[in-house]
Length: 212
Image (cartoon, rainbow, N blue to C red):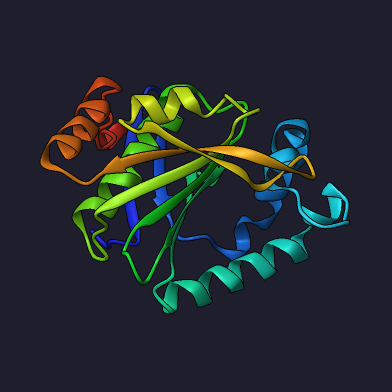
């Protein structure tokens, strides 16, 4: 299996794959972002441009090119969550600090994506980063203190809340405190992540499911 592709895995009734972003994902990426604007814009909006402009096909093309350059430089490992029939579910991007080797997780999924899918797919991505080059010793995930939504997923994946970084980044256009969730790459952690996959019965789809 190519390390830039994880899956497909059957999670519940959905066949999910983690793979590199593609230019052809643009229309689906835009659809999901516009549908979930009220939830995603505070965390992922930037600058003075409106959300519609930030979610344009041009914006996606620019993002894909930037992610590819960062990947070649060894600074990022980007994935998208998608179904095997092409439906876009979200993004999962790992940024690598060259000095420490630490990885930072940035993640979002559409509101309609089941929690089981978001959690199991995230566990797959984190496990890949802990087991395959560039293997990282630690992973962090800064979350705005006013945005408790990601806490359940991160806790279930084994992350623990660490220090609060004051006014670390913008959230909804304002400098905001962020709780830095952290996860150490240990044998116990990797076993926990595999347990998450087992809990949600993440497994290769059957031949019948593949043919549907």
